[in-house]
Length: 304
Length: 293
View 1 (tube, each protein chain N blue to C red):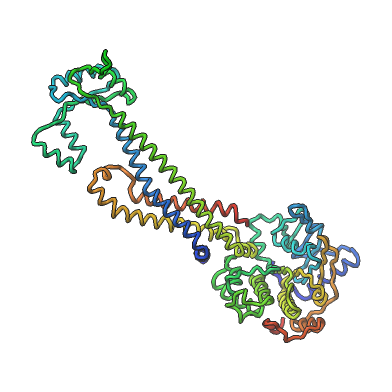
View 2: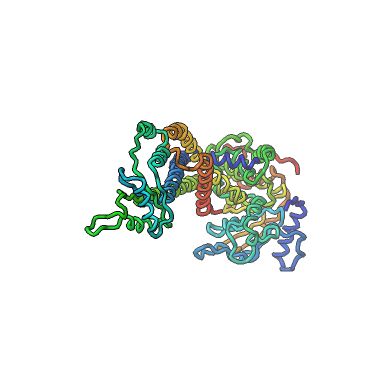
């Protein structure tokens, strides 16, 4: 018990003595943890979105507004004959409206939809599900083959437009991938910087305490007795930084994210990480990083 | 390793050596191994500098031995070898029968706890008080708080620094710093005390005070190995002298047969022989007459 107090006392003594490098390390850890605390939910959310888009990959075949249900059903029959089409869904005007309402929620757009006064401007549509997302393009070409004069000529005159979800999905995927890569690179860089700054703090501390270390060694302190104060010093830096960052994240969540998510379906809908697991991950990472930081330095600079 | 040698044993050890130097007749091996023994020990530093060359000697428990020689003769290397800091390239270095170089690395700290070492540059911690400097040794070797509270004032009294407990090293004279270093080395009452130039840079009176302190520690049964180049002091001490020259042991002798003296008798005699008047204490706390042993 006395030993633990000795180690902690020595660690704090060292931190006090080299206040400015310790502070620099703590601030870096705060920044890193803070950014990780933001990045992890964002990355998680963006990959969820991509998954959603991918699962929704389908062709939306819209009919002319004045086409009848009979014409539309005939078109659906034609489409069903195309190879690689797994199934098709007929979307009536009412169903279309229902789906739209579900998508926009009860916000301003939802309010607008209720003011249609019984009119329904939506066209009839057929949703085409391919057996494989890669066959979307060939199916689309089959539905709207290029005519003899170069102009596209749909297989049924009722068809006005084919909306390909692929393009949107591709764009989203590219963007999210880029975001993911950039954020990951920044996060890794920040982790490395934190590691190096913690290592630097410990190195300075070893240098500042080289006389103590020498005396400890010569009067017969065991190797771990000499090492522990430095390890604890690294841990204090890591945990202090992570603690401050977590507090800031919590304040941010309560004051910014929570009120926003009540108004914006977008934020609320993203399935991200829970706050408590996030905190545990961040604190765990800071402990690991500070341990590695002090470990590297002790191995290199503390010859016992 | 704890030991309390009698005067008889000490004298017998001295006689053994004189016998050995007279004729090389083998003597019966002592029941316990010598506290320090070097067998053909050679130390070569990186770069090929030979610091010790085939040095062999043994030190019995309770002896007071001087190691003399010019600068660079390997005196300090000898101390560093004994505490396991510098390995012997060949030969053996034995402490109480244990080969230092064959000790597992994790046992070295425990070896050092049983050997008190007074370093030439004291190695005191400048930002800690006298008390804390001494207590530090106990703390880092895992002593309990009660132990520290009991032992530190006791040892500071022994070295005559009870009035300077809360001073910092830079507020002390050279002799006082040396006493702190000795207190730190001796606080665990190790059976073996090594001192590297304990009287270097000290005026004669202060040097005698330090020697008196070491003499007193020796009388508690601790074996002393003192490295010095203070030939005059060595001659007056009339103890065994090992002379090193360029890493080789060139002399191993008792300067003169010596009688048992009390610490104060010792002090008076050495002062008289060196022509130093008592009273010029240079800020040193005078060593009080020892309790009769």
